[in-house]
Image (cartoon, rainbow, N blue to C red; front, side):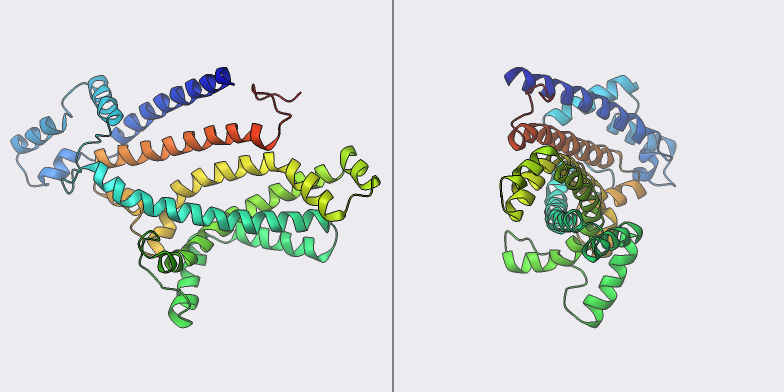
Length: 318
């Protein structure tokens, strides 16, 4: 087990290093000069050169990269070119909002997706499966921004069931915080619920036709026990993989939802930073999101051995 953990940690560290290189180079390929944006378009060349020296943009790229990595390892991402605020503080203020939204949306996706997938697998060829597949097709086809706008217009503005915008921390006011996050989380989670539903149905259909399930039925085991103890449990490997990947995607893809509902999350911070060519903030945000992907995938790999004891530590089945 320890050898497997070390191997996966080494792979994750290598992936993070490669991702940091891509992020560093990609940000510098963006059009525009942050020194000019910070000094002003009308600034003289001497002022722009001073800003470039202050930001370290005059150093060779390898030197800039190693400085960036060295500071990032200590949690120092520099200061925002636009506001002068430490980037660590900006991420610390916005990341919890996005994480709360992503976790809430994933709960919606898992509950709705797994339930719809089980129904579609158990009632194959009947109207419950048609309804579940219809929901999946609708959720995958409708753009999130369009569904979010409709939800704001009808559920918030006309019916006044949910707030149209704003954010309250669930840690300060639990019920009010959940109330403010409910509509954005449902809108964001529907598309991911459709993906979970499709994968759950496919995996359960295959599992329910396996020999060990027929044996369990022949022994007189109840229908509920067969479906959930054998069918759903043996399908959780695929579902866990999808959920892990979707959670990482939720953190990175909450930009549109945060914009529609005016949530002060990391998505809004990312857009503002791109528009103003704020190198330090863009680098830090992308690196944090990439790290979240890597950590989530690492946790998913560890969960495999918990869900299915047949899996070897090396990741291969017996």
